[in-house]
Amino acid sequence: MSKKTLNEELTEALELIYYYQQHLEELVAQRTHELEVTKEMYHTLSKMSPIGLCRIDKDQKFEYCNRKFKEFIGIEYDDNENLEEKFIEAVHPTDRLRIVDAFQFMVENNLKEYAYEYRLRVPGTTEYRDVVGHSKRVNGGGKGWVATITCINNKKEILSELENIKNLRIKK
Image 1 (tube, one colour):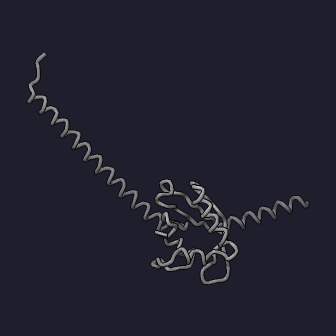
Image 2: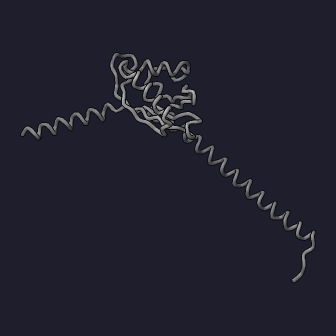
Image 3: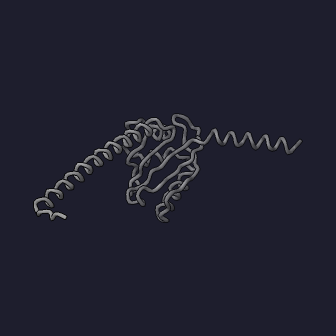
């Protein structure tokens, strides 16, 4: 066995450091690219989604709402003022307190997620549509919540029709 000189050992160590540095730089570039692709995909999905999406900060202020969310509450896409108030105004008057209480219950009890049904005014009319709201904590609630609104009118109509069919069968 030949003994390595200190110079040879240092050269080997430097080569390993160089190799790991190159590998680390490749990993960082790959992860950065993956993050950009994911970010672009999320942005595209949020723009095209048939579901209203919003992000609520830890102080319960709306940070972001996608186009569909704003359509649901009847405001223009570039309108970002007083979104919380505009949302509550769009909720049916008899559902408002229940929605505020439900969200407060979720926050106070540190629930990971919470779903609730309520009615939202159809913009420009006096009619209301049935929706399901779903809120989910982000990073333990320290970053806030992500919330969705999904219209369930069709689902309710189908359930009603199925109930009518069931009742007709029972009567026969």
